[in-house]
Image (cartoon, rainbow, N blue to C red; front, side, top):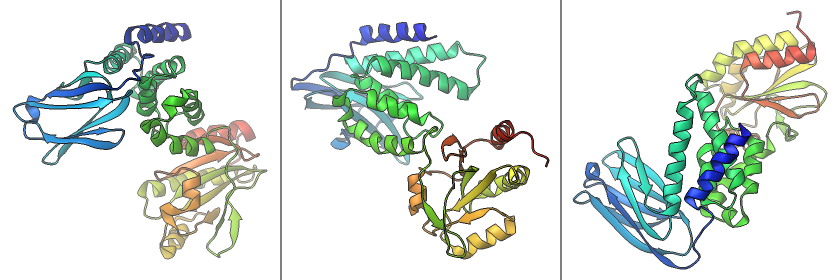
Length: 348
């Protein structure tokens, strides 16, 4: 598999010539033939800054400008309540945009053509994996993207692949995300998209598997502060809220885990993102949650939420007895399997 990925990446490096980036100031054009988008509003952004606002008229739109090196572009097309986006590479030459029905495609210049060809190759290889479920296919494509990034750290395509397959995806390997980001060429890391990714890369690495969990104290319902975990016990940190129905659906499984393993060096600490104290306290009582309950009543602005990178609820992290993160957003069967393997079967 590794040899195949290496050969595959090398081939596309040669075909697309992605190492060549112009440094001279040159003209570029973005031209679109979009017969299905007549009278739609067009906005072109370069490095996040709008440079062109117009309409699709008589099936066409066109913009010409100057560029010193390959930049990140975004085309936004809006008509009535429908909006579509197309990310593209702004570079010297004529960049053409076409509507393929389900998506827009940019082509006609070296980097744009290289990216399109690479995506077609990813799709072709994924189609061969007919026996795999969708989630595994997604991971397979991510492995192809990872191999490409490792072999082409100076390519703007590599940065786009990192954004495509890792950015805002909580199912990815946070340590790998961090390593791939920092493997990129320093010039690439100074680009607009890289700067947008950087805060998330850092934040997610703080709570990556294998990292020590951040230390923080929060108050309980009696206003007494407790650390959100204490070394010496395997701890499941559970973020939730009284208004979160999926959180409440998880409570029977949490209660079962707690009863199974609480006598075997395991505990749970729940951190609520409620801002209504009464709603939180009443939910804890109604749901019969017997373990430590913490809440600073700051909701999504809580330091705990920011520090642990909580974006959705429920959210859980499993720590070993040293306070090292060994799993995130695990299914309860997975947690139970880990605890059974570590502690032996419970007597519950």
